[in-house]
Image (tube, rainbow, N blue to C red):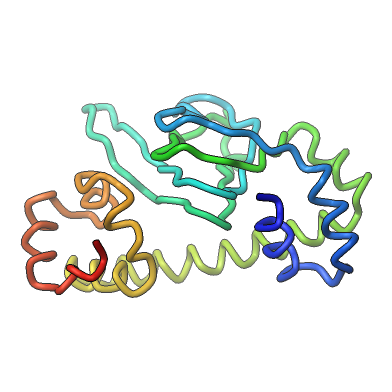
Length: 195
């Protein structure tokens, strides 16, 4: 399973295969059952994750009880709630496993120790975060400027596997539409090949 991590790290560091394997060997990996909540809204995040296998949903529940899905993370994606800018450091989001997951688990309190032990890790992390932030900014800009149908089309082009991996009401929430609207939009597209 750690070969997934090694292959991912190759994109961000100019290290030998042996050095990458050695680095990956010292990374903690955990298995989590479907339904496990990794972070509750209102808690202070103390972990970050990299998905080797599985799917994690980022969501929040507002004061009226409405649940909104903000993102889905799948294989070879990192999951970190950044809230150092907030006064109380509490997370506005929850993270839960939608499938059985195998995750690299980083302890944010020990982050500097890891960087001191493996200086190249800090540079790799920065490059990974820059790539993630660039992707998130592009997705957000596209989302705001698009119609629900265009959002669904973009999902088909970039993340079609989500259609069969996540509950439809969560997918509709992620797209900013009702489940009924999602059903109507899906009928207009030929998605039978995704089964």
